[in-house]
Length: 165
Image 1 (cartoon, rainbow, N blue to C red):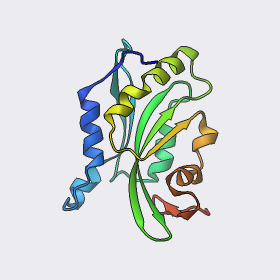
Image 2 (image 1 turned 180 degrees about the vertical axis):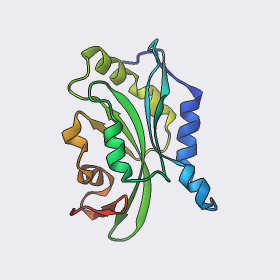
Image 3 (image 1 turned 30 degrees about the vertical axis):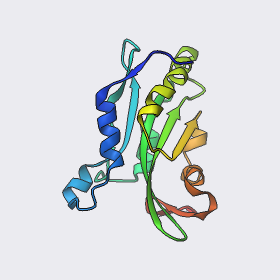
């Protein structure tokens, strides 16, 4: 069931910027590219918007995956785009992952409106190969779980870190 929620134009702009990787981008441009972004419902629950201050850039210090996990609110739902960099036995890859974060502790009303609005944002995000619904920190805290979504046992590193850590 659709909720009637619309997607703000800026959300589509962010998605397109993350999707299109400029091969000739210099190091400064690469560092400013978004690695992960959280989207939420506007205060009036009518639009899906980017959550202010909830982004990770490629050039940010530290492990982007751990930072991303820490960014998720413990008691409310969110949508997220995560630009995963990983290696299989054959090749290096980068894929956008659409994540629907719906923790068990989120209010039922929030879970319902986010679940019924998910199609609105997914329809705008054309070409996403990986979708992941996460219902709590136990589902997401281990990078192996994301690696499994990306390519199963053929994935050997995620964000430059071996999976056997």
